[in-house]
Amino acid sequence: MNTPDPDGLLAEQLLRFTRRVHRIQKRHLLQRDLGVTPAQSRLLRTLAHYSAPPRMADLAERLEVVPRAVTTLVDGLEASGKVRRAPDPTNRRVIRIELTDDGRSTLRELRDARRSAAEEILAPLTGEQRKVFGGLLDTLIDGTPVAEQRC
Image (spheres, rainbow, N blue to C red):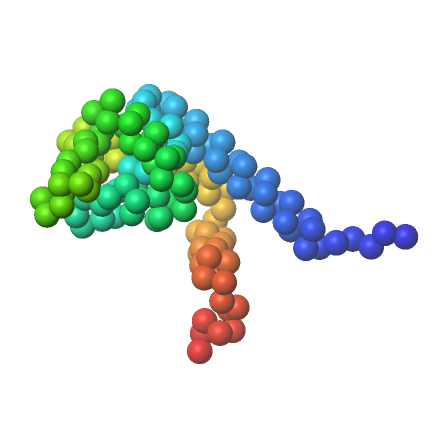
């Protein structure tokens, strides 16, 4: 006789939820016709977190991808005018990646698309359920059991 595997069921639910989140976010991005792929939007969001334009190697490290993948993403974003390559003022061999005005505008649109996707995803939940869900997500993201968080 097979006994139910609650962790297996939970893992499957988590994977299905993740796929749903990606599908809804992708649809919201496509509806805004921003001309960026999900990977390019991730690079733009990452780029916005730097106080000064980063090197491609910095982006690759933060995105946890190989440098060649960043080069391809930057090429596409540069061709569409959302980023530009700029020489480092202290080391001419180093190239920095900067957001353009169009890139900043696209980033604002991306944030709006992600916000509207989140609203759609969370719509079935009550305010209290959202609060509990947020706490559970924090626990999973931090990897710290709830009992340890309260200490």
